[in-house]
Length: 220
Image 1 (cartoon, rainbow, N blue to C red):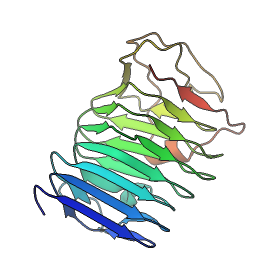
Image 2 (cartoon, helix red, strand yellow; image 1 turned 135 degrees about the horizontal axis):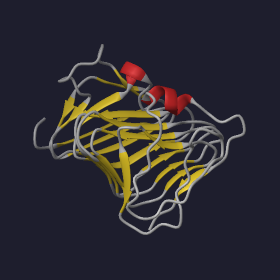
Image 3 (cartoon, rainbow, N blue to C red; image 1 turned 120 degrees about the vertical axis):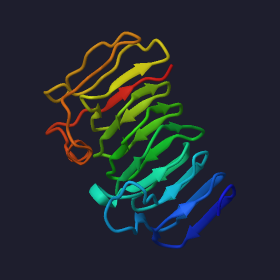
Image 4 (cartoon, helix red, strand yellow; image 1 turned 90 degrees about the vertical axis):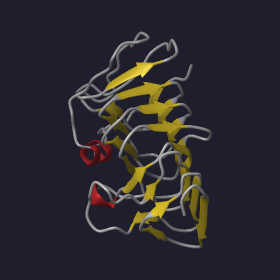
């Protein structure tokens, strides 16, 4: 369906092939996971696509998996992404993306959040939180990453790859990130670009400190 809305709810798992709508896409896996049902990774096969599409994703046991199992998108915004119990959130976007409305939340005992943009810039306009006892946040983009809402990981790391910069629209007190040793932090005045050694999205998301420390980039 083009220039329309798509809404699906599954009682357990939901395996995605290709959905296209330029309005909105709403997907809920009430007691299961949302997974990628396409084989391999190509430049034109996206699980969800539409140049103006706003996407809502909700699952119990994960949204995408690492590597070729991530949810591939070519959309405008993520309005609500929520994983409640187990598993991770892995989303790879083909161009610019905004996180709006309800933001992204990963609850439960574990669950990293990985957003990987192969082109374009990422705008975090609403909160992104990992609340489990294990779980990291990785943001990567070929363009800039602009943060104007809180990024919070209760016991994991918050990172951006070496090729990417993080800018802030507000004037935060400090930004905490890993810089080679567990629990290290640095003050980050407004407009400063924070850079870390480049690692792959899967490697970074799966790594944890031996003594985890909660990480938070405060909102404005």
